[in-house]
Image (cartoon, rainbow, N blue to C red):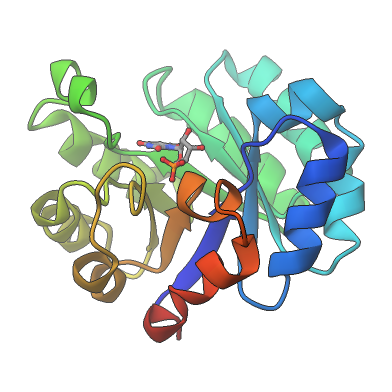
Length: 211
Ligand code: BMP
C-alpha cells in the first residue's frame, strides 16, 4: 500500500550504518536530516547510498532561490535522491529546489502541514491548501503531510492530483499505520524503528502496509 521510509535520526555514523544495514531489506527509503549530518558529517550520505537504498534529504530548505540552488546541488552531489523544502519562502524559492532536483534526476517534496501539535499555530486551515496549489504550479513531486491528522491528508490529496504524499508521525507521534498507509505514498517512521532494541524487527511490524 505504501513505502516505508526510515527516518534515521541518530547522530553517530556507526549506529546509523548498523541500523541501515539491519533494516535494508525492510525499508524502501531512508530519510536523513540535520541530526545525522551534523553528528556524522555529510559523507554519511554516500555511505548510506552505497547500500542501494534511496536517500531523502530532510533539510527543509528555506532560503532565497540562489541559496536554495546551492544547497540542493550539494544535496544531490552527496548522493541523495530527493530533497524536502519549505514553501514559505515563496514560489521562486521552491522552483529553485525543484529545478536542482530534476536536473539531477531527483525529486523535491514540499512541507504542506507538519505533524506536531504546535504546527497548527501557523499551518492553519487554508495555508496547507495554498501550499498544495504552489506544489502543482512549481512542478514539485509531492508534499509532506501529517500522519497524526489523516483527515487532513485526505483533504490535501484532493488538491495535488497524482503527486506523492510522504507522511511523518506514525509510531512515536501516535499516527496509526493501518489508517495512514492507504492514504499515502510513503510512511515516515523514526523512533519506533531506530529506537527499538531490534530495529529490523521493528521495521517488519510495518511489512503488512508496504506495497
Ligand atoms: P519520529 O517517527 O521519530 O517521530 O520521526 C519523524 C521524523 O519526521 C523526524 O525526522 C521529524 O523531524 C520528521 N517530521 C515530522 O515528524 N513531522 C513533520 O511534519 C515533518 C517532518 O519532517
